[in-house]
Length: 252
Image (tube, rainbow, N blue to C red; front, side, top):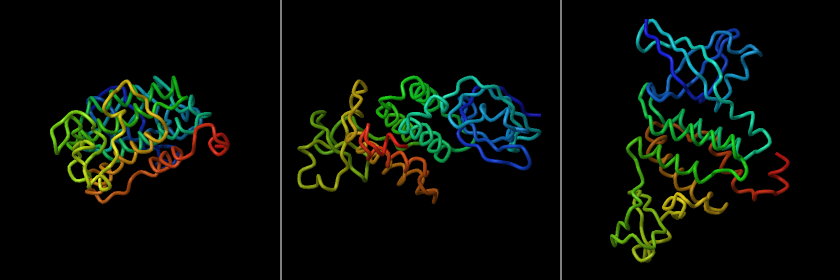
């Protein structure tokens, strides 16, 4: 019998049989794991197994590699705090969907896990204005953990640390204004929030940032596995194209 107990984030939930659910969880020591929650579909358990929640998980299986049986107790609820904040709720859904689709099963990524816990906690505590800079830095961290990190230290052409405003779509390396030259139209914009963690950025920088990390996630992570980008991430990108406080944003 294989058994362990650990805090885990709920990444996805779907019905499984009669009254049970299949959950995908992300833990610090075991990475992404799958398991069946017997009776998890009951109304009394619905609040626990919500995407984005932090749950103290008990996981059991008879054999290694077998689909485990899961029980859990709620530690922190995030989604319930974001119901009145469409962008924050979209951020939560997108982050969990990206982690679920990008991370290999049963492979620990402790830094990605801890940063995701901090991001979701921040979303729950301060959903407005949405902490998009933290979200985008988390996606950059995820890329790095999977071996596809962006190199934003110096210009790939001149070696300078000044004037970094672009990223090469081929190498993921930063390029300065001087180094870009006549090729700048073929490069990806680099929002300054990736270079300075004290910056929160504005809506146009968030859009550029999510396009930047999305390009490399699609090319290097989801594309090589012949998988499409998560729909939840596409919905987040659409929300970012709507100005904060607009009628459409408020209506949703």
